[in-house]
Image 1 (cartoon, rainbow, N blue to C red):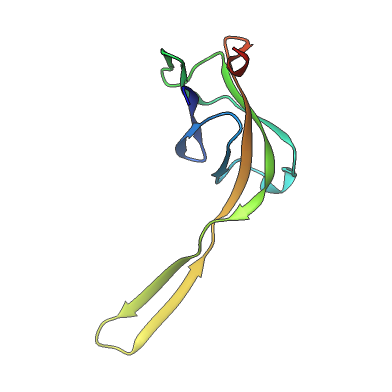
Image 2 (cartoon, rainbow, N blue to C red):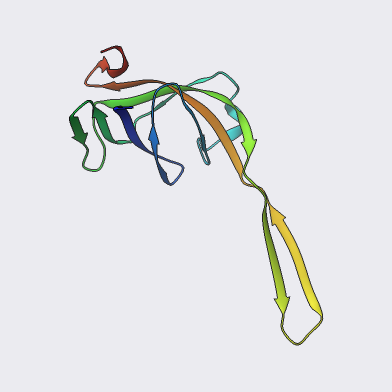
Length: 118
């Protein structure tokens, strides 16, 4: 697809396209306030590509936004951590799963217009 945006969300940079869903951690400071099918707007857009034109921000584009909605909360794959002390019979295994939020991108806006309608 030749229409996409690169956004900064949850400490990571994601390449997003319209109609696809993505998993992001730390989507909001208060996670329990976000419910399913709630609309979100992400203003930290680093780059937008539409056809052959590329718009680059320093560090973000001022008049760009990625709009979408939250599908549901989910978990990442379980991370297993083992701690072993050498020369002793001490082993400890534990793990955790990171909380993620799955969202779908509905529109990519730049300069006050919707890029997906062109």
